Amino acid sequence: MASPDRTRLTLFVSVLAVSAVLLYAVSGITAVSPITLAPGYMFSPLIAGLVVCFRRDVPLSAVGLRIGRGRWLAVAAVGALPLVTLTLLVAVAVPGVGFDPTVDPTPGLELPSGVLGVIATFGLVLGLGATVNAVFAFGEEFGWRGYLLWELAPWGFWKASFAIGGLWGVWHAPVIVAGYNYPSFPVVGVVAMTVACVSFSPVYTYLVIRSESVLAAALLHGVFNGSAGLVTVYAVADDAVLNELVASPVGAAGVLAFGLAAVGIALSGTPSLTRGSAHDATPST
Image (cartoon, rainbow, N blue to C red):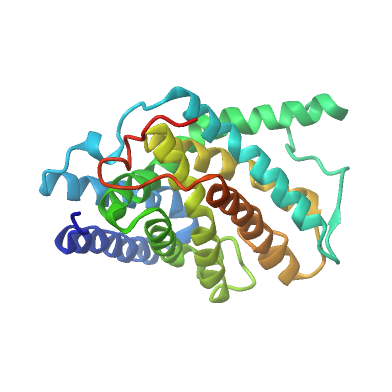
């Protein structure tokens, strides 16, 4: 079985590193926070993946740029919602964290009250997550679960997933140290974000394999980003540690929720991962 190509990997990581340097250079020149510039930075994995594919003659279809299996794309989009719900349940179960049912999750937008309001809220985050958010998420996912998953496929499902998650987490460092996600813990936040990304990664890998498309990762990522705010809105605590490192979709609550999903994958049967199967799964039951 072919091993990951070090030349391609070096090129990929080099483009990411240059993008991080450019982010801070632009931030310094314009006096604009890296967090404000983050939407543009999100496309650096896409750029890195395209550079490798075009310069090293890797077909885009081989790295998952295809429609894939519609049923699993739908699972990827909708699947973010129960994961966010589980994260919220874990968060409010932590001592010191409360649940505020009176909060308005969509300020400035009038929604029905009661159950209809909940349904409308989830419908809104699903719609925006699977469209607008998914476009930005694709900027990341083509690099992570497109090219890089294909490259690291010889390592197998778990090792490749964890390696991608580790790089994914470290890649966030420029915006984390600027105060993104963990404003009270900019340094510890880099570690926390990396742990979160490692725990998230197997679920993303699983859905990409099943769907035969990197678009599944973009949909899951987009809807998760769109709905994760519900956790921070409804789960409230007076302590910064609880708010940012524990009862957060990218804190301990999110890590546990995705970790349980990963356990479910392991118990149900881990799909095989090879260069040929990374974006071309065998029929699943």
